[in-house]
Amino acid sequence: NKKGFIFDLDGVIVDTAKYHFLAWRKLANSVGVDFTEEQNEQLKGVSRVESLEKILAWGNIELSEDTFMELMARKNDDYINHVYQMDESEILPDVVKVLAHLQSINQPIALGSASQNARTILKKVNLYDSFDVIVDGTNVTKAKPDPEVFLRAAESMEMEPEQCIVFEDSVSGVKAANTANMISIGVGSKAVLHEADYVFKDFTEISVDFLNNLLKN
Ligand code: B16
Ligand code: MG
Image 1 (spheres, protein in one colour):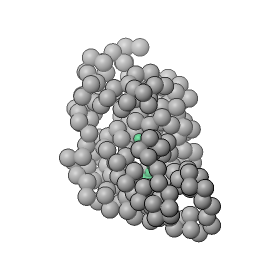
Image 2 (tube, rainbow, N blue to C red; image 1 turned 90 degrees about the vertical axis):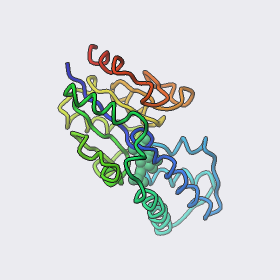
Image 3 (tube, helix red, strand yellow; image 1 turned 60 degrees about the horizontal axis):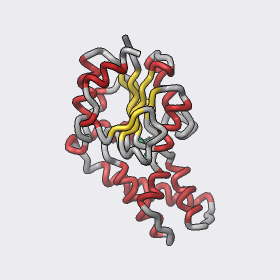
């Protein structure tokens, strides 16, 4: 039996969510806005444009198109500086083990990320070749919670949405998976990701038995 396994990147494969937070916060502070880690949950999985829109709304700030573009570029430069320093040690615990198990039982594996930096990050941590399909922020027009990114991944794997299983750390990503009629597996806090079909703290809690059982339905 075959399923399509779709992994989000930031916060699931690697903890780049912390670098996004640092870079956005620095940028926000530079225009006189501050936000909490709780508010930051709303930025996870969301596109770069929408993230800046949210931050500016929190600060009641309106900007010209030019300045908006400039701030996005500044945030990305800062973020990229963190990314360039990444290596395999930043792969989250047991991610490699889960990927290897799925490969060993011939299950198709896709990346479904909102990030335009996804390919760079996968190469930095040496996981680029672990994915049969990569759909990222350079391929999609609608950001999570829209299901586009996951539907495209399913299509490229030649799988029906109902046969796909999505691993996500963000509220918007879990919503996207649910809207796509896929099985959603939240990776992170149960309190935050309560809309997911299953929630695990991290991949160390996901057993081979659990993965094998997913193939039975
Ligand atoms: P970039 P994911 C998302 O990646 C991040 O969670 C989100 O915080 C970020 O704004 C978005 O990518 C865009 O990233 O600025 O690198 O294009 O979680 O969908 O892998
Ligand atoms: Mg994420």
